[in-house]
Length: 396
Image 1 (cartoon, rainbow, N blue to C red):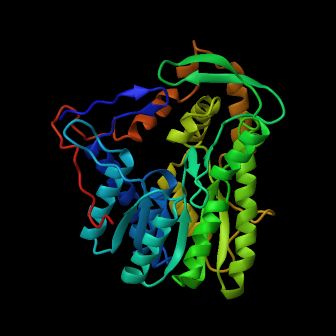
Image 2: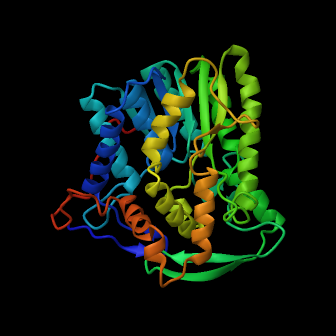
C-alpha cells in the first residue's frame, strides 16, 4: 500500500516502515561515527521501541558492541493497516544488529505484567546468562496492576491551583491560551502509580531474584525538570509528583545495589519532541522555542546525541559517574544554561500566531513529530508501494 500520515490530535494513526528504518539507520550511523564506548556487554531495555529506549539500545549495541534484549508492546501490520512505529523501528534494529553480528532479542508484551518479566528472565538465562545494564524507559498513560488487576490512569494536570498559559496547535500554528484545573488526590495517586518508580523497582527485584544481573549492574530510568515556563504543568504538576517518586526509587535501589558494586540512577534529559510531550499543553510551544535557540547556538541534541553523551561522558567514564546533589545524572545541562533560558523566556513573551514561524522552530517541531512515525524522512519515496506487514527477527 501507499502509506500517508493520518493524524488525530497529537497522535499519528499510521506509520511508515521504510521511513522508520531510515531513521534507525541514521541513529546507527551517528553512533558508529563516534569513538567506541567501553561500556556494557549485555543490555536489557524495557520500553525499547521509540525515544530514549530505542536510542539507548542503539548506543549500547553499535557504540559498545553489546548484546541486547528489547521489551515493547506487540503490534503488527496487515494488508489494511500499518503496525506501530515502534514495531517498525524494532524490526529495523534487529536486522541491523544481525548484520553486525550482535545478539538481539525482542520480547513483546505489557511491561507491567508479571508474565512479561518471567519471559524476559527466561531469555536472559538462555541467551545471555546475565545482564550488566538495565534501561527502564516505559512511557504509558495506563497501568494494570499485575497483582490486583486494578487499572490506573495518569493525568497531565497542575496541583493545588488552576494553570493558564500559552499553547500552540503545532499542525496549524495557532497560539492560544489554555487553562487546566488542578488534579484531584486520586488523579495524583494514579499518575504516580503509572509513571513513578514502582514498576522499575519490580523489574529489578524480579531480575535480582532470578540471579540474572551481574554484581556490578547499572540500571537507569529517565526524568525531566525543564524550564520555569513548564514548571506548573510539569515538574510541579501530577507528572512531577511521579518523577519525584521515580527519583526516590533510584536512590533506594542504589543503596541496595551498591553493596555488590551495582548502581541505579535517574537521568534528567532535555526537552525533545516525543508523542508523550506532544500531549502536554504548553510543551510543544516551549520545545519549538527551545529548539530555535539551541540550534542557533549549535548545542541542539536529539535522542541519539543525548544517549551517546550519556554513555560516553557520564555512565562509562573513568572514576565516579558525575551526579547532582540529588544523585541524578544531568544531560539537560545545555537546555538549562542561563543564556539559553533567558532567550527562550524573551521569545516566549513575544510569540503570537502571526510571528510563530519566524520566532520559533515550530516547523522543525512539526517535522520531527511526523518523523516519529517514519514520515518526512529524507531519501524515502513516500509515493512507492510498501508492505506494512514487517516481521521482527528474534521476536519472542
